[in-house]
Length: 134
Image 1: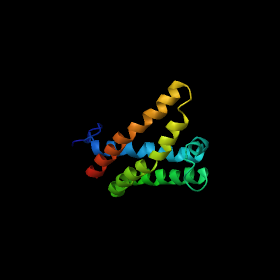
Image 2 (image 1 turned 60 degrees about the horizontal axis):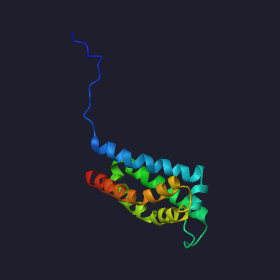
Image 3 (image 1 turned 180 degrees about the vertical axis):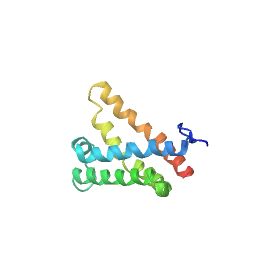
Image 4 (image 1 turned 90 degrees about the vertical axis):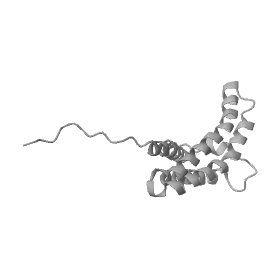
């Protein structure tokens, strides 16, 4: 009589799933932060956008939670990754506003704010890859 081995069978790594998680979980985390600590997000909402800054903070938090959830779920991953691209493009004006507002802060803050701007490109290309693998 053969007994089953107590060792676990190794499953193949899922690089596409890991890439999706790298996209989904930061979106989910930032979505939660929009509600837990809204003040920093309120501060970077451009003044030319109609409505209150808090409304846009909460709206973008809901969007990030929805998009992150869609990316995390395999059946909606393609749609979620497409929405992530749109979300990254939609929040770009807030990142520009932050870079402008922080230009006179101490240099690490100013550099960090400006450094966020080119990060949109790899975030978008990552979302495109997740979309193509879904």
